[in-house]
Image 1 (cartoon, rainbow, N blue to C red):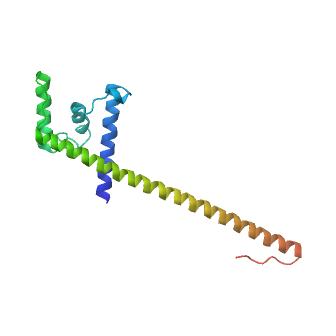
Image 2: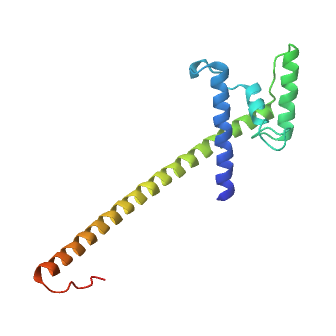
Image 3: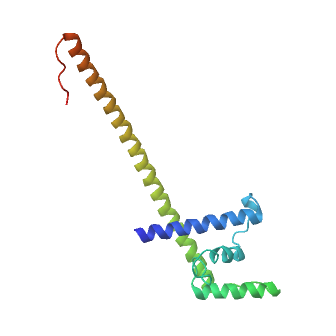
Amino acid sequence: MFIELNMMIIFFYFQETYNNQLRERYGDDILTHPEFDLDLWMEVGSSGGPDKNQVYGLSNTTADNLRSARSVSTVGSSQSITSSQSKEFVALQQHKAQLTEKYGHLSSEYAQLKASHAEQRAESAQQKAAYEQLREMIMNMATHSGTCAPNPF
């Protein structure tokens, strides 16, 4: 569970960084963003990890192939993504969907726990207020009757 949660955190950090870079590069209107920016993915994916040659979510072979394709495209050729790279991209999209779903479930569970905790705190505050009222009533009764107040504890 911890490893899975850690992977989700890394994934969402990567996704947030990628989306922020998309906004910086293409503006806030998501309709102007490309469906997928390979250069940006490579840039963001290899910028924060301990191994600068790895790209988040891609095998080393695929990352090397994409780097090669990117360097060829700068010379004037068009980028070509092989069938295996395309399959890996589809697998990444499916993995992203799974992580997004899990994140949604965890967010929902967290919201429920947070609401439950707030309810418990409110109930505890009400119980404390009722206890204080009862204690005050006992003390007042003892004062008015002229006897020693009993110890409510």
